[in-house]
Amino acid sequence: MQEPDFRVLLIAASFEATRFGQRYVHDYLRFTFRYVVHLNQSSDFDVAPGSVLYPEDEGKVLQIDTEEGVVDLLFRDGRCPEWIDVSVHAVDPSFTVLRLLCCGRFTSERHLLYYEGGGFGPFGIKSPDLEFGMKDGDKIKLKKA
Image (tube, rainbow, N blue to C red; front, side):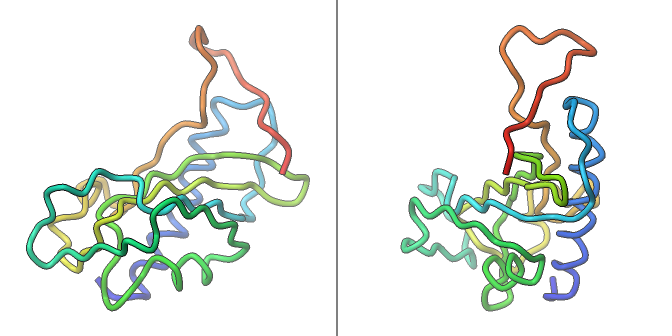
């Protein structure tokens, strides 16, 4: 994967996660994004040949205001995380905050990307954090950014 491809997939996943999240929240979600990035959220005992770990990422949570900032952080030396879970996290009148939970294993091999078959490369679209006991059609109120 090349950096421009990763950027396009990030933008597409951001739009898709926002559309998907709208089903579960009362808030109006804007298609202008900010990101909360949680690095190294995986158990990395079995690392495939060619995958790279960045131990310095352990426990880091970063707020990033642009897609370019996310690409600069997550596309390293021709590699990206094997999976990145994307979900709506918070809302502001002018933007939507998306949470990115990132695998600690970085790869340049497309066949190692968990969500490649879904068309979003490493990005997996997830729901916002839902409340226990929610029923079909229930909606939550997001925290304010």
